[in-house]
Length: 397
Image (cartoon, rainbow, N blue to C red; front, side, top):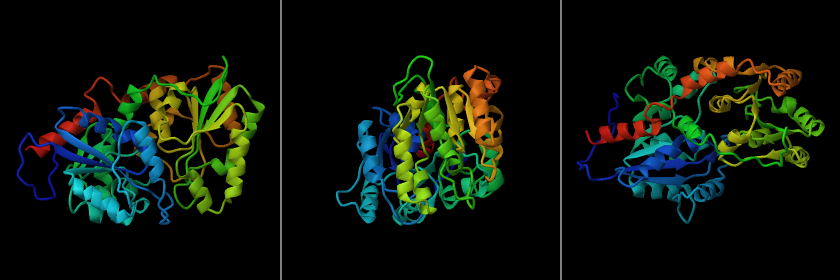
């Protein structure tokens, strides 16, 4: 695969387990790593994986939080994460160093989302960094998605599709084939394996339609500009009130509400909307990290998000994309997917597409199926299996 060690290796035998650390700060994107961790944790795998939890800051303001929730969600999944009793960041780092991992997977390349102790300069001094993308990155911000310091410092980057290899080559010539391996995407693997799981938080009757509404966090037009939440949140509330047979679950990006606060929206306004929305019998707010069973139970997705619709594409179900008209647009990987979306530039167009879909008028069905086959091929060796084999082969070379 062209990967090379960037740190001096000590001698080892084939019987010594390969130690791998997973540093987790956001449960909403844990599914990118879950299958890799699970395979490594199986008896006889040759690996010793450990999960370490951290707080994070989606607004890059220096206010790190959420570690207790992340730890609790992992525990509920049967994963006992490691954290110090005294939760200073220096002690978090000391616990990780004490494990002495051979390899470390961090969830994202965004340095300012994590405490300074867990940024590249501190991590690559004692382990080999690896990266599985946290989402199917589609926004036209290619230097930020393929050429950050974390990318450049990685021993191994596991890419999802052929088009992502071209994007790495185009935007990060210092990476090239040196540390980018073709494996497929473990997140799609997880979605596929769990596609028949179903959970819905409202009580539905025969003939009701179950809709996931997934707004992105990028309300600031100076950065990304994809979010339409401020434009249409009251119209979604009105739709739910007027259409009791439409069961709408609000599944916001984990950073949405903090971004609203950071951009001057009062907390009382956010609280009032959440109260009004969730007080209806046909609505709910779902913020848990594991949203895969929502996919299985739902009938369609309405989103302005830039990666969520790629995951939902594997369900084969319809997707209405609310276009803000002010976004940074899509890269080549995103353009691969847009033909499978019903694009709406205003809420009336949302209603037009929704009405047609409720009448089983879905001309993009075959297009979505074609795109899904490009994203994930279940007949090939799984992405997780390939990642384990790449690390094991290189480690024991």
